[in-house]
Length: 98
View 1 (cartoon, one colour):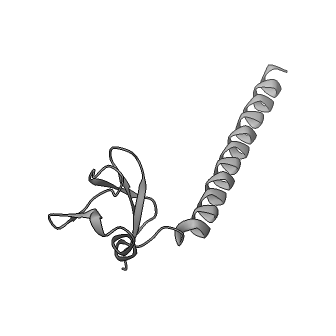
View 2: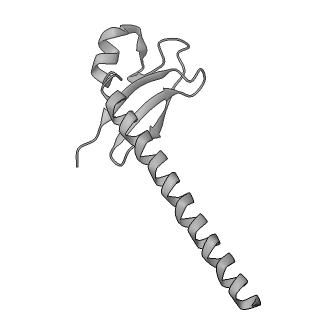
């Protein structure tokens, strides 16, 4: 009788793992789908500089709000979103080909 209870408990534990990973995968896919829809709303580096001409300092692109240097966030496999390291303003995107 004890062996039967142990097998049932293991089956429930495995089912819980499968359901948990399934929910996690669904959330990640939904997040990726929502992000892809909003990806084009970020300006490219050229569009950012055209909108904020004072955002170039000694050949570097800087934040138009606080003049801080941007940090790269690798959000997708080949693309980057640059955000100010100081005030966390989202600045521009870079679409990397390859």
